[in-house]
Image (cartoon, rainbow, N blue to C red; front, top):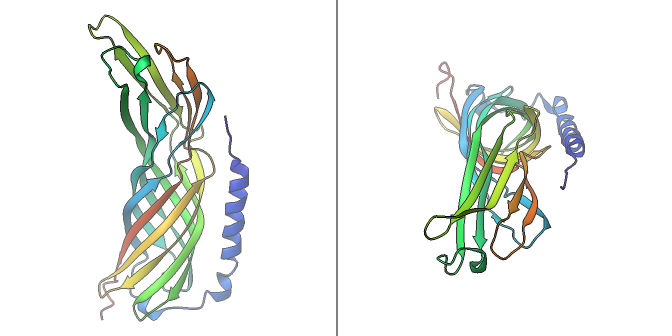
Length: 268
């Protein structure tokens, strides 16, 4: 089974964060008047798409196709210095975690006679939601009177209890007197309940009269796989068994929208 170096990813993430954070205090006095009137709290929500899982066949000819999975992020963020060029951002995020999204096929000669032309099907499963808190360094650059471009990077800690999931495919003969379980997939999440990841992204902000609107594209890279498991094709009429390993990184690309209200005492 292919293992990824969580230590290496952790070191890279921390290294990049420290480098970018080194400029914070050097330019912390740079302020933007247009951003002073907004609250430090903001609501965030948006769609994300997880990278498709990978499989590593060990023996046999049968495999299956993995597909990307859609999810969501929702929660709130707290910007410590929203009106300055450099700032720190934290918050609380809820996400829908994936387990698998697969498509599999069986050859005609491996199934009962009534399955003319073979059989193709698909299955998808999500896990419970996760809870995470980011700690990001953010750079704001004014691009217009009310428009700002931002770049952000940092770390994210995710709370996700360990668990397991499985699925199987069973075929019955025409008169239902015999059944064969021909495919199975079992996956497990890491035993540690708190997992880390590296975050990088950029976006744009627009200051309206009553709310500061933001749209950010981010990429999240986990320090360890979200799911590990194995698959098995067996009990087919002709083909020998096939076995391999399954890995889902949990890395994703997200488009997040946020809104921070103007302070009541400030009016335009």
